[in-house]
Image (tube, rainbow, N blue to C red; front, top):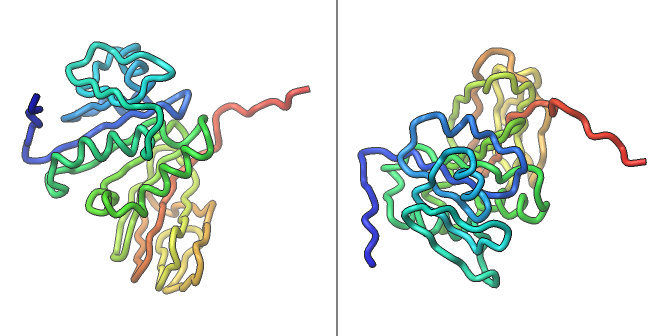
Length: 228
């Protein structure tokens, strides 16, 4: 059966995956054009009153809700459920028609290998046209990918920290309007420049060559107690 994919002037796609136990569901209150539940994330959406347009996954941990489109995957496969969902959906849209791709439940609380696989989406050629539009959102953290050029970012609510994670060697990285500025710094290997802070409500940075993961974060509201 041929699927009729909607093609508005611009798209804002929300993709939810099952990794984090406490995803930021407030994000779902903003307007969106397409909602995709990935594996157990589809059931979580349904339980909180959000019927996804698509449910994609092997559903080994939770059955899919009764949404319009369901794609059942084999447990044994080369892609993660999120990778497959991104590939399946994005193959039907031109990158210039998509404004933002918001990904919930992919950064915390689950398996470390899944977390690293999600960060390494930035290196996959099949997502090269879309990676700058990925926006990972959680309660205490957000992550976006940036490549060469000059960029301005806004501080997100009460997130105190701003970190720049070099996923590649970096050339002429400059940071402005932050507590710890840089001026045309080169790094010959991937590097984690963490715990910087905004001085104003926005900051700018530029990069001649390389790929950055920019993370805004805050300390968790509750701390874990050691097990006796």
